[in-house]
Image 1 (cartoon, helix red, strand yellow):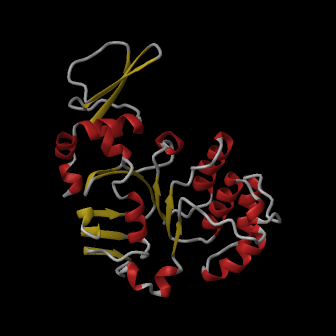
Image 2 (cartoon, rainbow, N blue to C red):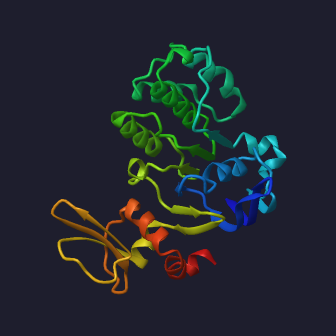
Length: 278
């Protein structure tokens, strides 16, 4: 489990994160959402210990990730948005780097590469951007890391590759894993992320499961405009509208609409989910 308490971080005199408190549980695939510049990448690098917190604390299984303790390092993997096109074959790279993770499975790496229609014998600096990104995703999943942090993993992927990515995440991660995926391409990951974290400037606006979201909010896909919508978007043949769910009705969450509703009514949403954030 990852516990974040009163976390603050600044670049010089510019605050990025302030007094953030939340918990990341095992067995969850968290979608980390937020506008550009709110600190999504910063939070990921803090979680994996590449940066030191300015205030407060982060503990992963009781350890501070910035201490870089080998027993914790071997349980986590961070995949940045931009990946290096090294002059090695994918197979050679994976065999060499995989030794740092005790649970690394090279056969799994080759299997995922095949699912991705990627050639493991091709040099990584000769791959397209999409092929290179899929190679790193395959390696990340093959490490067997309990904590997996991914920053915009679908950037550079075409539509079939995004489908392959979703399938790989669901098929090749352990039930006890904690996965945090930062993205601004919400629709790419809508069907696999649960819970959803929405980060704002120096704040967490929401950290809730899909079940909790549908308990508090109702997503209406109809043809009639209703008063009191927190967010409304016109669709072919009707409207998508988001309301507080006062009547306990069931609905399907649209994560993009959720994001817009949260950002338009920050205080109201935080009030609805106060129990979750306490």
